[in-house]
Length: 502
Image (tube, rainbow, N blue to C red):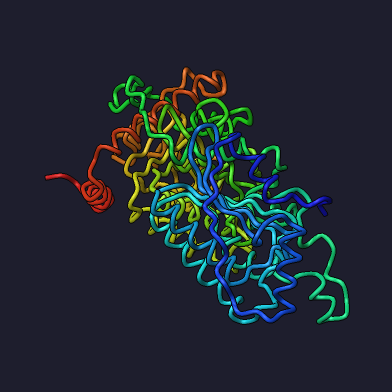
């Protein structure tokens, strides 16, 4: 567990530009209290140097303004009573009114027991204010300090668009001391730690205090920096005759090269800012996918895609990966950012576990959510596009395809096994099924093809920079379209796909 506890003032000083913080706090509201409780409050104020268990205000991070809420653990273990809750809600409402992103850093034992049930239900009041802030499409960032437990973690501590925690922090719903008292045995070791919750997909990362300022800076670049699209970038090839006429099987084999660049290289070499997120936030994490907030050539977006480095014959995408995709869609909706999806998959998991955890329903929900999403969407078929796992990320406003990307209901070997009862006809099936980029463009499944010169594996940096430029170009053009027209066009596109024109 973490050692010395970080005070609220230390947190503020470590994150906010020097001299920029302005307190929003006024005298705490008066609450009913007997003399013993009043004495406790006086001792807590003397010990902590604060008048309540939370400080609020606003400041700048690298010049960008942000609202801030920070708990003070040395004031009655950071517990939240009526006065603290009122201070928190007032700050959230002010942040919403001033249209500021909000950074909250709880460290708390939870509800203030001295105030009983009235303090307990304050968590609803705080959560409602956070929900209103997020409904205004404003960013909510959470940094959990050691310890964060109880109702605080189960309300405003778990509602962040992005959530990180202090290394070694105790983070959990049930305090270990309470568990010991109730069940007469210690809580299992290693469960309620920041690192374990990160591995399990409950939080997005573990970051030391000295790294929080840079994390917030990168987040604010994506969330509040105005889009400045670089319109000088060239668009993807949109004419079939301009796409090389090479055998489909050749593209399949090239797309399977282990050195081929994927989503990680795209973010590393083409994004000017990125913040990696992790898991569903609900206890699932899948190594075959990657979620990030990112900025490409002056345009911010949520990016989600299949990560070829995390895939193998024994590790393919499961239902959790698709639930992460739906988290990406919710983030795009809540933050009013466009969504970019990267397709590069061997296929969805074929297993008992995947069936029992709802793989097929998650594919269906992904398709449904993506088709009806209100924000601009771009899908990029970067490499292999096999089965339902690829289809779940396909239906966007614009669909781009790498020159050697392909899309098929099964890998060609699987199609060959069904039709010919062997796998030797795979090259012929690849050709017959129209899976290559040239055929996808001809059939209106994709809108543009990104050249490979001659193969992305031979020019990885140049290729992913071309992909980033093409994505930025499409996002810039989509941003100029009225939302209603864009939505209608997307629905109409898939309504008419494959229907002969008269």
